[in-house]
Amino acid sequence: MTKQSRGRLPYDSLRTVFNPHLELHATRLTVLCALIFGMITSRSVVLYTLVSHVALPGSFDVKFKRLKRFMQFNLPDTLIASLVLRLLPRGKHWLIVDRTHWTLGKTNINVLLLSVVWQRFSLPLLWAVFPKSGNSSQLERTTLLERLLPLVPKGDTLGLMGDREFIGAIWFKFLRQHKIEICIRLKSDTRVNGIKVQGCFCKMEINEIRYWHQAMKLYGVKMRVMATRCLDGSMLYLAYQGRHQEGLRHYAQRWQCENLHQSLKGRGFNLEDSHLTDPARVSTLLGVVSLAFIWCCLTGAWRSVKEPLKALKHGYNQKSIFRYGLDLLQEAILHPQSAARRRLSTLAQLFDP
Image (cartoon, rainbow, N blue to C red):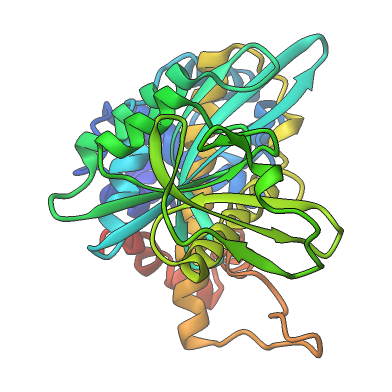
C-alpha cells in the first residue's frame, strides 16, 4: 500500500481528532483507529475476526501479528478518563463503581470499573483488571479513585454510587476526605449507631420508604440512612447525603452501568468472546472497545437530535442511543458511497467538543 493510498483510509478523520489528545506514536495511533473501526463494523473484539475488518497494509498473517503486538502495548493510564471528562459539561458528576467477572477456561477475569453517568448510560473512565474472583478490596477501590481525582477539572464536584460490595471504613473515610458525595447500598447486617440496619427498619410494606432524620454513624462517618421494600420483596438499605428523595433518585441511576455492560458484551461488541487472559492485555482491549462504545454513544446522541428516535407503545425508544449510533457508524464505514460516509469527518469531530 502506497503512502498516497494510505492517506485516504477512512479512519484518517478519527486519527486527526485523536492526535492532539492521545499521546501515542503515529503507528500505534493508526492501529488504534483501525481497531475501533473494525470493532464497529464486525461488532466483535476477537482479533482473528478483526483482521478482515481493519484497513492496514500487509497480508492476513501480517495484520494479525500487528494486532497482537498492539495488545501487548499498555495504553496511557488515564487516556479514556481524560477524554471523557473533556466531553462532559462542567458541574457535578455522578460516578458509578462496579465490578464485572467472567471466566475464560480456568482463568478468572475480574474488572473493577469506574464510570460516569451520561444520559441513560454510563461512560467508562478507569478500570483495574485482576486475575481472580471475588469482591474488590478497599485498597483497590481507593487506588482506582486516586488515579481519577487529579483529572477532575477545578470547580467540578463528584458523587459516587455503588452496590453492597463497596462498603468499609477505609473506603467511606476516603470518600468523605475527598468530598465525594456518597450514595451506596448497605448490607442488612451493616451496623449504624451500633445496631444492625435491618433492625432499624422492620415490617415494611412494598414501596414503603422510611428514613432517619438525623445522620447516623456507620463505617466511621456520619451519613443519612433510609430503607425501602422493592417490588420483589427485597429490602434496599441506602447510605446517602442530602434529602432521601434525591438519594433514591441518584441510586436509581446506578443501573446505567448495566446498560454499559450490555453494550460492551452481548448487545454490542461481545467482549466476553475474547480469548485474552493476561490482565494487561485485557486492559488494553477494554481501552479500545471503550473508545468504540463512547463514539457510538456520541454519534447516537448527535443523530437523535437530527432524526429523533420513535417511541414504541410501551413508551421506550425503538433503539438505545448506543445502538442508534452504532448502526450509523457501521453504515458510514462499510458503504463508501453512502450519505453516512460523507458525515464521517463530522462524526469524528464529536470527540472534540
